[in-house]
Image (cartoon, rainbow, N blue to C red; front, side, top):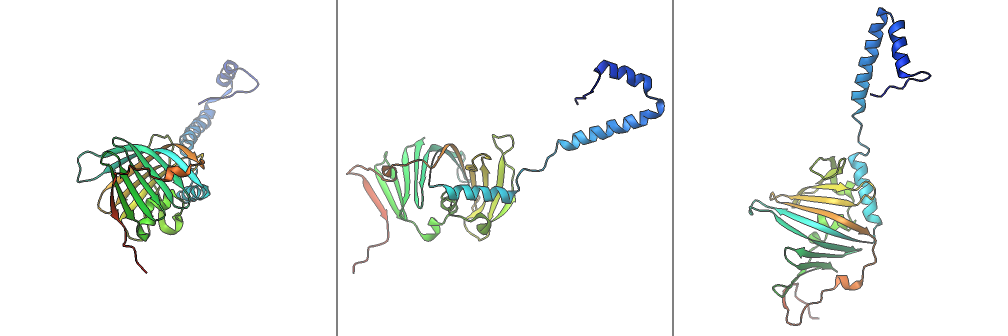
Length: 249
């Protein structure tokens, strides 16, 4: 603990203290020393800068303000059915209101594209394209609604404090528990205090599986070319459809 003595040197203060203080003053000195030690210990604890509700509100406001987003991502999938977690990484692009591209680069290259109610998955190694019509429930899933800024966190979730492993010293973390029953048990979020963008998102489903997404090199509101949300597949690509039949008038 640093002591500042004004108007004299530290050595002079010590000498005068030993000459002038009487034995009866020792109790006062001891009391002040104890009090100072207690205050120093108490001051080491500080209340969190933000409540979980404030963290959620700031994240929601930031995501709602975005028009587009680009980032690198690392994805880990943990399941009781596989011994080793599946680790993947790549780039992700969002464009409001409903465009999303997940470009996986490692360990296998493939692309997931979501646009206009469709899910397109292209696997170059197999030269296959899977097309699926998203149901309203799939379009309103936690991952879509959170990352596209379409969810009202306070209306959709019970917001609680959270603490989970992080690379940061004092991370901003919250737990979201869906108010309505579904496939997701709860979600853990970690945000950057300067930008309020999500840097880590962990989903726990009701089957006991866990998906963790870590985002880095985040670029808010980039100007994304229209071709990013298009798939250029070879003419001989095998197309596997899971689309509703077309009604003929």
